[in-house]
Length: 608
Image 1 (cartoon, helix red, strand yellow):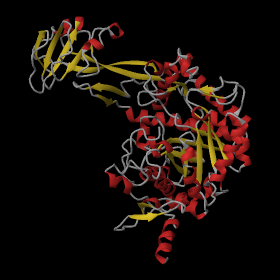
Image 2: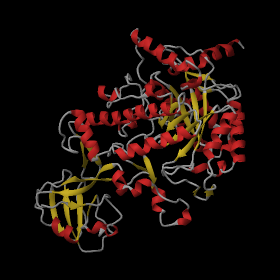
Image 3: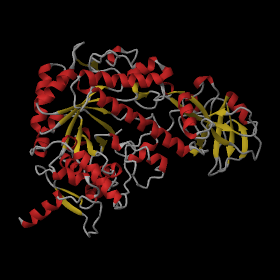
Image 4: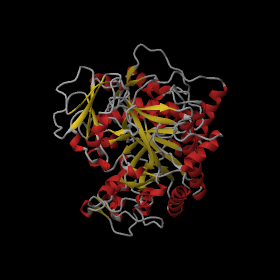
């Protein structure tokens, strides 16, 4: 019993400073949720910073259930269902719910003055004019659950609904406001590979694949001639064609009508149909042939490569619409706060290149900019691998985009608290912090000293963690602990433990951080939920569970055991957030240094 008590005291007595101990065995059986089986966790890493220790000192732990709007329509489609659900959530031990009131399609779950109401989605329905938000708020509060309303900041359309626009049987409805207002969509830089060389004044359009399928599958695309690059002689091309043979450096070593029987090892074959084939024959031996990028700036709806349709955050109408939604829900409902979901970002590295973005960027850097070359240029290799050539203002542009989102966070946070005094503002984001330079969001501390190459001084300054009452990061992995991942040969970074550690470190005690988990990842191995929950609550100050629709009935008993000892979220303990930040400020003033940042490679897009 003495040994047991010693380990327990180690688990709960987390140091309130950032010193790491050198210990020969860093993995130790740990339990911050006594109702669940213990998990082997890194005994030292979760001690870094103040937040974990301070939350446990006060017995505080966030236990948040996320309720997706579209996926849960029928679960909240009557008052009786809402009442029973909130009672179940509270009885299980959760202490907060987040309800998604404006999904990525841009319509709302409640009757809005600003857009149409979503009353059906893929066969699920609820009555028109019915307001589940009002009922969720009422019954959440009746059961002493904190309740937060979530929206997608800059998404106003759903690509699945767009594809099904002319097929009512799919039940997706209007694809979204953004498709009806292309002038307000984010502007993306899109590129495609084209062939360039001294023999051609006009560049030759290329397929984006090297080997099968043959060129016939792409002939006539957009009404343009086609050519393709191959590593071997294709057998599927039956039409008349012409070819170039290139060496590994891209120099022409031969040309011919028709296909050769073979090409030298390491060579590439360029095959062209019609006019493209005729053009290829103009190349001379020794000509250097290159694959270059043909660039266009277009609304994202014209080249959408993700589900949400992202809007232009610099456009005044987009900003006005987004703020109007915030004011509408925070005026209408007695919610505890407002949450921005992951679409608080740009579409990806390719956006935004709108005229409004250019004007704002030039004002920020104080000079005219070659647009977009001074930011970056897409590149292609002979083997059609796409790359990026950073321009002289590339890092400035990364910082500028992060500043755009930081300024928006400040503006919305102020709006939330002015509209409903005493309410809170939070954000959900993916846990792989290194992804977010490409998406223009820095949710870390503005004093974060992690060793990411993009974390320049100007970029670091845009960290907005201190603007938030709490932050949830999507630690969406099948395995809870680094120890488990090592046992099965996975990367240690692909775990809830590693993701939680990184999230906690980048926030650097400027707000509370809650590791978020995805229940669908546990369907094949439900017992993993126990170590996933232990890892989430050991490395951060609580857990957010996504989502009610993910076969939650299978998991209620596990959560009941995990949460059998009541707790309140740290962000709802009076004065605790101020104490957290004050202690960090004192540490910094005393010159105490953070230990080295943990190097974990997370999964790209984890939690998006």
